[in-house]
Image 1 (cartoon, rainbow, N blue to C red):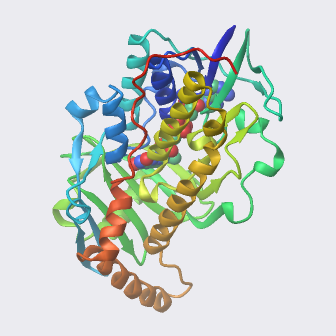
Image 2: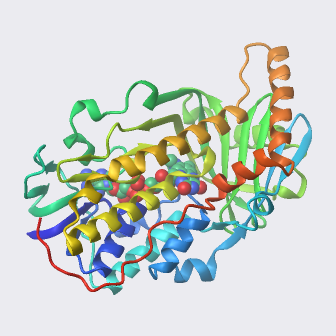
Length: 408
Ligand code: RFL
């Protein structure tokens, strides 16, 4: 099979790329190792940034999200028995998150793609990618029973995919680009008697707990656990008991928690590759960088990567602009590192460490001071609010000129 662009992975990054490129007249092929039902069921993110929704809206990809998502613009910090309300909607000048579960966005993007005339090949894993280091073509993606020859391969297959294996070893995350944190998080989906009205971050002597809105019936919860701890040790009863302890005093911000539907463990690390491209291979989203969910940024960055890469490829095909495409890593890496740093700083704020209870209490008092600084209207809160909600800069606008063929 021959196509212009082969996309490996039908998560948010791959599906946004596929939709935008297809609408711009670029020939694509999408392969995804999971079945369609599996990708449309995979619950992960839920807080969608303002600028991401604006981008999807401008490309005609947000109809259902705009009709069904709810808006959230505040979070509560719980610390030493105090509740501090951080009204980031007000502090960012009226910009709020859109709450829309990732699996629904994926479902919509698959439907949009099919409507535009492309059916991704589900249940078809890519097994190997061939690209020349000097950028000469064509590139090739091998799948069982299918060989795709193409101009470019877009690796959107997450951190455990196969496309990053085609990068040279020196591109791997290492040194300060690969950070393992001294704790892990349990990730939970729990039934609730009403929707979570805002985000709750509880900084407690016993450890961190977080509550995030998802739907009127389901909440996403996080619980700090010791690094390396096995999920099996966290029975539903123990999870409920720890949540009660850490979230005590949250008041109406936390609905009544019912059955826990899903429990996972997240080994907390952030890792960023040294480069997101090699020859005719370009990585986007989690394939290029994985952050912790502390700032709710992973999916948002995946769409921002996809937006930049789609724009660069459209310029390449329409105007023969190789240089802009070659600048992909140099445009995306600084934003990813800035996001990684802010998310890591926030994560640190949420996890006071200390061997002894007295040390931990002193750390908690310091955390309370810093959280108060964020929550009170002022420069620190406003800067954090803008970043947290994704108030800017804007992602690339759609190209309007008619497509012009230009083969690399
Ligand atoms: P995905 O979504 O992992 O999609 C990759 C796809 O590639 C497929 N694949 C392959 N296909 C073909 N051949 C192969 N060899 C393949 N290998 C893999 C996979 O099956 C999959 O379908 O990556 P993408 O598109 O880069 O999107 C990244 C996001 O999914 C991720 O960053 C977010 O979910 C992170 N995240 C959050 N991000 C936010 O912006 N806001 C949030 O509120 C938020 N909450 C979260 C999160 C991640 C979480 N977990 C479980 C890590 C909450 C949690 C609990």
